[in-house]
Image 1 (cartoon, rainbow, N blue to C red):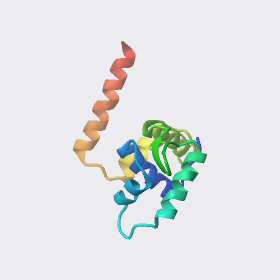
Image 2 (tube, rainbow, N blue to C red; image 1 turned 90 degrees about the vertical axis):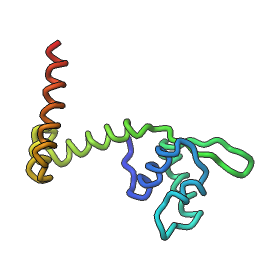
Image 3 (tube, rainbow, N blue to C red; image 1 turned 180 degrees about the horizontal axis):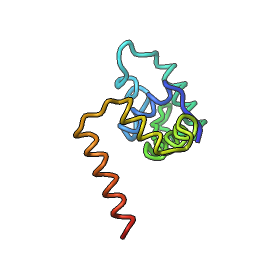
Image 4 (tube, helix red, strand yellow; image 1 turned 90 degrees about the horizontal axis):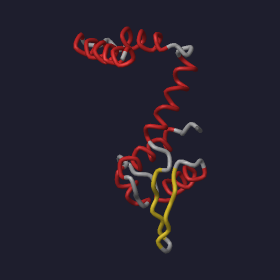
Length: 124
């Protein structure tokens, strides 16, 4: 799956939230100062060429919708992050999170609980 630029990802986040939208709907969700209509329209068309977005025409207007789910993009992005920055090691990821993010004890407890639940499911 192709990586998105920060602006493309920002537009995709909005489309994932809205499910279906015309360009003006996307613009309304962007923070001020809002970019011009033509800029967002171009980004949406690029996303369509990349296979992330589809459209349904209504005369001159197009309604856009995500073709790639947020979950699928998250998985792909995480795999790339894991490969490029953590040497494909989940242990390195967890170590980084615990050391660098300065987790609160209750957050560490929650992570531990999730890991234990996963281990219990695998034993069954």
